[in-house]
Image (cartoon, rainbow, N blue to C red):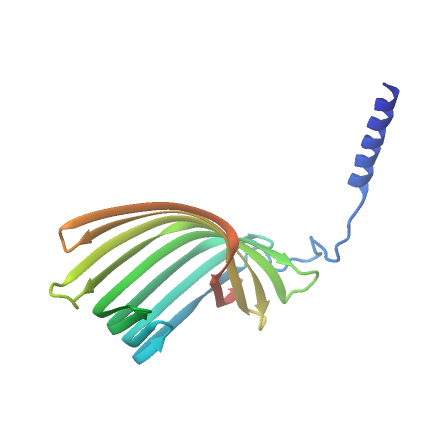
Length: 245
């Protein structure tokens, strides 16, 4: 009993000493002045466009690729700082892509096949509510980290058909999604009001379902749920933002 009491006293004293000790990690969590003041507005976004044209191009086991296509994306957003270093707002986006595969040959060992006259086009609308928290790096007013929490959904519509066979085969689909995501990043002020941002997705939860009709006869449905915690380099985003009072 005496030994148990002594051990308990040592544990209590150790816990008290650990709680009272102050750890200095080299930066100030709450600087004397805010990185962004309450009442500040932010508007910004990004625009991306890419186009490709292939003429008798070969890649890995695919030869004689003749195709063309494009991808375009517009992603505006707006925030209001309801308190120092914290803001709420919205983010919307529009994505559109097209691929026209005129012909291509696939050759793997003794297996070979060819495709021709395949076409696909789709577009997607997305809308999210955003809550952002800025984390100043020391007393710097030029650079800071931030974390976005996004809650919203998307609607995607597309069609594809293959006219290379005797009959034309076509598929039309509608997809819906509900999403919750966390996107951290870094903001760097280039001028007093203009800033560049880089963000990447690390966590997301989503529920998706798709309705499909093939040749205006057959119907199909699918749904999926996913959750993940990992750095997704494919979701890396770069954009510009403008701050004003």
